[in-house]
Amino acid sequence: MLEHQKSVLRAVAENPVLFRKELEKSFRWLSNQEVKKLLVWIDTEFNGQYHQLSHHLFLSVAG
Image (cartoon, rainbow, N blue to C red; front, side):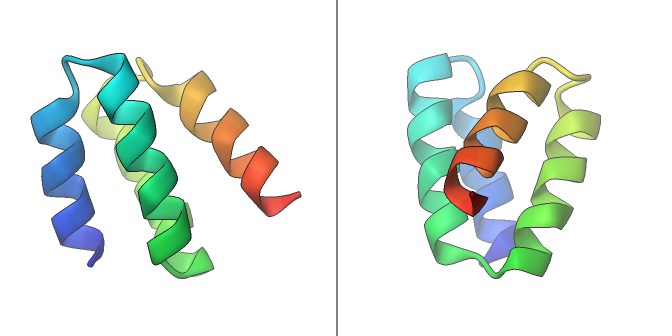
């Protein structure tokens, strides 16, 4: 599932609204360990472009 979500996020990366929606789905579907891997991947793959959004969403879901 992690690889699938990476694929989806790559496909919607040009649209921040869709990216956020897909990221929220990822957080619901993936295990905590997979989510942590996904956050690292997002920072690397998108050169920090979505760092603030992804970590903010993660904290709101985790907290």
